[in-house]
Image 1 (tube, rainbow, N blue to C red):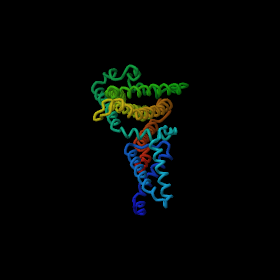
Image 2 (cartoon, helix red, strand yellow):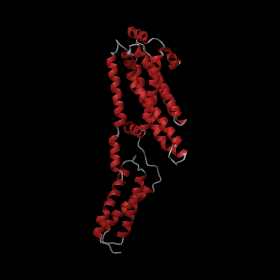
Image 3 (spheres, helix red, strand yellow):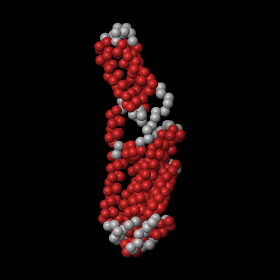
Image 4 (spheres, rainbow, N blue to C red):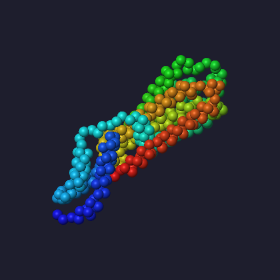
Length: 340
């Protein structure tokens, strides 16, 4: 076989270099993986190099080139036909900083629907109580019976007391909040098994409670107390419940499988890692919310100025928004550039 060796090398070298870069990335980063187009590109480059190796094998005067291609083909063969599991390093900070917000952004439409369901419930309750304040017991469950009293009376009572409301019980109260809120979040996600409708119902129900409480205190002229009480922990707790609803809608979408010809089992296996990531992230956020509610939210003026508590809550809300929508973007861009 007669070929122009210099021209052959010039034309084929870009493929060799691309394969070398791809293999190096997979070998250096133990957690690196390829999507379907990436796997196809790897296989194509492997075939090109194997074909080129067969061609240059006839040239005894080019041992260095042949050795380079043999090395590339061997590495590619080992990568393609590897049967052992690739080792994964446990990187919790990277998971929280990158994987969690990236997963959130992949399903942001479900989050927006989840947010809308809760806001709709809050608006509905606010309109009902604005017209019929006597219906408050029907909108607020009995387990929150302490909220049935007049808001102004509660504010006056809590602002006038000199006693620590959680003296010696802050840690226990915080743990109780974490457990209860995590249970509610898991239930909200699991309710997505009912084609996502269960999650939407629970979000609407939570919105009813939130809207009823807020309009009750606003109509009583206790807005400063309301936001100073709810914002410090609610800026994280309420979005966490919405995130759990997002996970429920993702689960419901996998069950419905609209426009997806894959089997139900395949669809569930596909979204499984994302569901685990979302609910685990929610659990971590609720740990923070529980600590804040026990150690800050329950303390009112004159202990802690409402303006300070409101500023703290607003700062949390902005940081959470930036975290979910911006964190890990650099990692996404890097992977996009490295993709074949």
